[in-house]
Image (cartoon, rainbow, N blue to C red; front, side, top):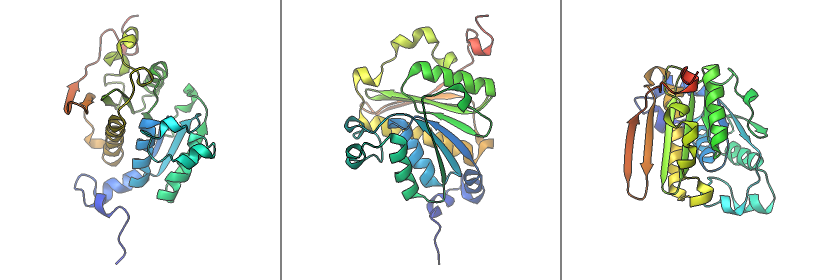
Length: 244
């Protein structure tokens, strides 16, 4: 008897054959294939997403390897760009998935309705706000995440009815947020946060009818603290009509 590569996830009640079929028809845009993006891309490709487009412009560096899944010392020695290296590793893991790459910095024209979902895996908050704005304007579901030190956060936003990144973190408060380049990053929090994003994506792509309103997932992997926080549309959010 031939066993499907997806045998174990097909047995999950919440996924099943219907969910797997939905996943294999889906098209996802992942912006950034560093720490978060390497986990998101790896897990979605191995799970059997239909098509995935990866956006990045960096080279693989030695300092990436402690927290960025799949990259190797050979990638560094060979001077590979992240997209080239990531596509090689992902395609070797699952040749059935269509993997597209776009080597450039983020720009708004990348957000189109050919995708069912956008996953923000960048480490740059001005870019995150622009992705949030572009997805809001296109009414396109997207997932936000960030991690630094020992803490990670992730939130799924299904539509313009949901709270968005500017409801959660008004832009004037951005200076209060820790950035990994300044305070370091525990590699395990990258894995946990990236897996949270991938889990949110998996739930939406397999069973979109089961999606619930936006909640912020906050994880501290040093104190083993896990929290789920309801986020409401802010009356001051410029995207939802505030500050006019």
